[in-house]
Every structure is written in structure tokens, then in C-alpha cells.
Image (cartoon, rainbow, N blue to C red):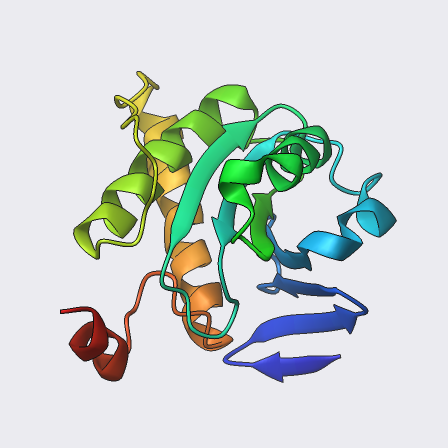
Length: 168
């Protein structure tokens, strides 16, 4: 276990699990070929981002589901998504990232990744209606997700200059 900018990181074969201390958010990167090994852990609601390469992300597909394990298995078997090699999985202790909370984060993450030209989502979801206090809590989760990604050099939200130059 290592710490980077207060992010706890645990590494297992095909899986990297990241968490901020005293926060409910869990962020994992799981390799496509080893998802089955961790299926029981991901049988829960949450957000996922299919990525082509965990080190130099150039393409992403964002979704939400009530069962991350089942949905990711479907995607990884889909011939149209063959170039996605891993998934960033986002869930919490069940208090915020239920179906509605995951839909809210999906909307926000697609908007953020679309600005960078990363997302390959065809359909763009509309913002789900949530109470203000829930939206505030979900925005805090999104902020935590950004911090975790930045801390472990997962260039999902923060593009490196050389990547932007290559793409542009």
C-alpha cells in the first residue's frame, strides 16, 4: 500500500484500488481480462469509464449501472468496444451512488470528457433531477474523483500538454 497526495493505493493483479482517507468514494482500475476475478466486489451500482489505455487515455466511454460487474462484462464482450482494455470503476458505500447518483455523475463526467474530445459516447444524457443537497454531495464526490485521478496520474480529467498537442 502506498500513499500519493493522501490517496491510498492498493495494487493486486489486474486491479488498482484508490481511496481518499475518511471518504466513501472508491475508485478502481480493472483490466479487461481480469474483471471476472473481482466480479463479486463490483456487483453494485456505480459509474464506469471504459478506457483504451490506463497510462495514455485517448478514448473513453462513460456509463452508469445498477450492477457494475454485469454491465462491464457485457461491454467487454461487445465487438464495438474491443479497443477498451480497462475500466475505471467508481462507487461508494451505497449512500450516494445508487442508480440516480450514478446517473448524475455520468452526466457530469461525460460533459467533462466531451470538452476534451475523449468520450466516444454517442448519446449524451440529460441532467437528472436531484435535490440540491444531494447534488452538492455528488459534486463533492466528483471533486474527490478528480483528485484521486490527478494524484495517481490517471489523465482522465487533466490532460497532459503532450497529449493535447498530439490530439490537436
